[in-house]
Image (cartoon, rainbow, N blue to C red; front, side, top):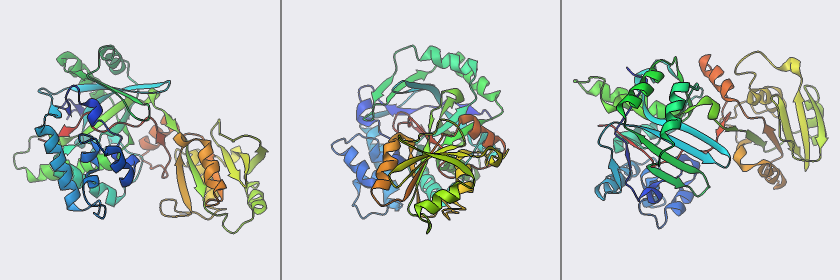
Length: 412
């Protein structure tokens, strides 16, 4: 089975792009989604966050939520706001955030390749979140949230995408956050064949973001396969919606930490414990790390620059990650947090919020100390996935985010 496949995308008709396109469903809470969709009847949030159209007390996992999403999707199709392409296509997708530009391909990725680890993962999933995506896809009979995948940069693929994106885009939307989203349709059979063959020649591609969506794609596909006595392997449910970017265009920001208390230590005692494994100094400005194994720490109104001693850095793809170095040498042994997935004494702050957010959290008195980390590299992520290992939680923060509503994948 091919690693990726073109598909008949369901997307906004000309002139409706700005009405439809919305931020990804999982970057906002219910109240924020409701506010964003207010006065915008065609916003894709009515499909991706349909609880905003139900009473506030409705459980977000109630069957009525998924049913409302299907109702809203059918309504947008019936009203001609969304339409499906007549032939299978790939799509070039460009994100522009300030000076940063990345161009990838929208395609459907093989469930079989995912199940056989040719589409590699680096995170565990949470059952409740995975079940939510399964129910959403099954009820809508469509995948509306793309999985964010990465391929090792390839001249053939990158060349075609560069050529296609010189033309006028079919969709060109600048979101409220200033990120520009452009989409070009690739319906030329020769280009489609060349792109498919280039991906088929790859050993693997990688999940960057969307582990729950890709797991749900696999579960829905396999369930429908088992229920279909005439299964051929060509059905749409055998693939899941993806956007795939070259690894050398990725932008991974820092993913920082704040801790609620000092685990019974005074500030002086904490610094003394830190000195056992780190060289550190107080600095006048925010200590944003500029190299691996260095950390910024904000404590008591003061920034410190921390450097883990070199002999403590292991030769291991997971243990050598900065998030692991901080956890294994400070957060767990000194601050007593061994399970960051569940411990409410720790929280995570995406680097998009800046160093000022860390100061704000600590200065509020609700958090005792903040740590700034150097961003995980794309090469490190791929090394972890290639080793069949799993990264610690909150290791990567990708920017810019994909939009919802540009293209959806119908399963029949």
